[in-house]
Image 1 (cartoon, rainbow, N blue to C red):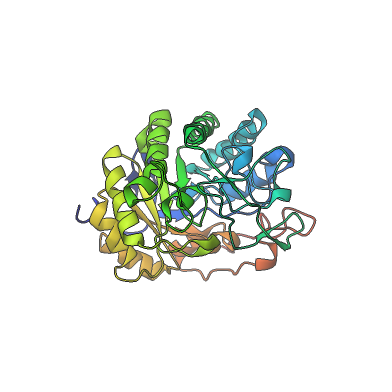
Image 2: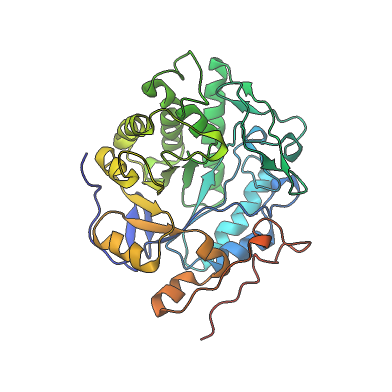
Length: 364
């Protein structure tokens, strides 16, 4: 495939990712913050949180479950009920009112779930009946053993993909500019991709070509639902989080990237970690010709260098956006960054605003 179709650019230059026009190349990465209200409905506080950070060229929301089965963490939002759609509409309107763009990350956790975090009627499903070995925080925040998943029957998989497509339509109905399929962090799509969590013997398991099938079909369904140029996907080849241990991530992700390269998708969002044998960004460029969002511990300087080299179309920052709602302006003016309190990443200690919407802008 060669290098992606990017040009040398500065971080403050505009860019198009598929059908989405960004005012700058600074992306707010998706971050779970556990602030959804009853019924997994986005709240007014969430709308404020995202609108405060609308200076980003693009906001990718926290992982949002496409169905009750897809939930695994406490107080994560959904996009499968009318109330959730209305809650997200307020978020999208608040971001757009500030001139920002926002896409929703669709996150089905699969086996990475604690039963107490879900509706009582919601199952835990996965490609194979293999439990996630990593504990997950329960309702009180304490690490809890995950539920044993039920392996999806072959005939059920089309229904799961349809839930994703319906979620994408709901996201657009709520005013989102697009969606991002979460294919990393050991969640359902990555469980299909990884050889150690996918022991299936049907057309969705075995060879790399079969293990990528669920993700390829899901991305095609999302593209059909809302337009390919409004769909991105996030990957992290080689990550071990939530028990991932693919025997050959190079083969798996090369097959995936080649299979979806011609779909006309908006972008691939790479969480860049060390990968034995080949740099992950090199792997992406070898097999993918579309825009790349690079993520992974960058500074302003290293991000600018990457963009100047034409190695990415945009760069994403996570933790930096938590304590710096005006991160783009701080970068622009060279103002030092504030540090976030990890103690309030997932809880406001009785007040959802604490460590969430109460970080101030820089003093002018």
